[in-house]
Length: 171
Image (tube, one colour):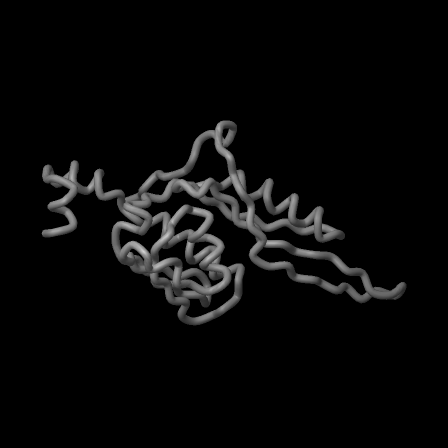
């Protein structure tokens, strides 16, 4: 079942950007070394919308700016329920595998670097997350985005089943 949770317009959104990682790439030529930078950036409105982007340029600031523009082009909507996620979710991208679980109020965001940036940009305040496999920030960000995009909204599940939202959680 394909879930279409792409955000159509970015005009009315107040997006905050977060730098996840900067990679310095060196190209050795006859004339010496040429440095360029790759920046992976996450943007979100801290209210259920998040996107990621990769920018490459000769300077760090230009790479970050390109990353932000790229991130604004692929935003997704994530169901946030009472400051956490509605259910447990696992996802894999490349060598990175992530597990995110809902947590009770007051737990905080228990997640490592790249995953933390994505989860906080979405607006999740209480979650337990574990990164298994590769710690490559590029693949971790992508795996976290995949996991968040596969989450199902409790209101939609309740509507599909013809029951109340409380009954979805309590069985």
